[in-house]
Image (cartoon, rainbow, N blue to C red; front, top):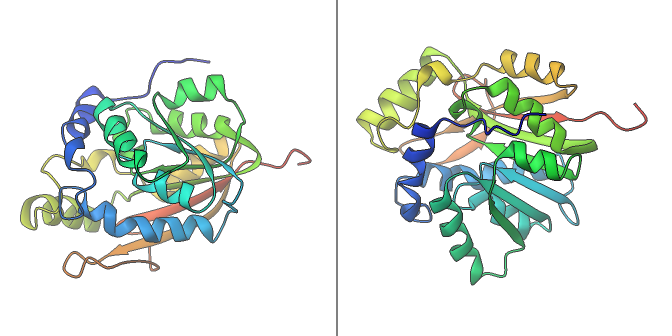
Length: 238
């Protein structure tokens, strides 16, 4: 098993440079703040978090990791951006959040804790790595038999290009320019194929609808722009 981190250094640098503003709800990550309650609700509707061992891969400054811990999970949260992990640790320090933050790659975590997690989340990361299929295989190795994996990403469609890049980055300036690369957006069918190759079962694909005017976010509709994915590892008996 290769322990080489599946990371694009330029992508990593973009996010690390913004780490200081991660917890500002009106800052460059304000869309994530709007989406986070909906992402958590998606996970809660499909997996038991109370008492679960969870891993948040690509945790950034800890937005989802803290929410998972608040729902009762014992959370290991990893990211390769040291600035993000520092911000996450500082934010959690005064909130008694049960999160073990680490500057660590998914490959390293899978090597030291294989098949150890009931729930794994990986939000808005797969479209930023050089080898998305390899990332999905690595995430699968983190899951115990019957474990649940949750992803969120952007579809490679003209609508996603217009909204996520032209609209969000250049017109509304909701996120910094250069945050996304259209060629790296991922179609649901690609995730389905990679999941089958990794021995994972595709349970659900749901659109994630975000209104850039009202900043309201909800699950539903076609996965033509943002979407959530629920995958599962086979049970030991299966």
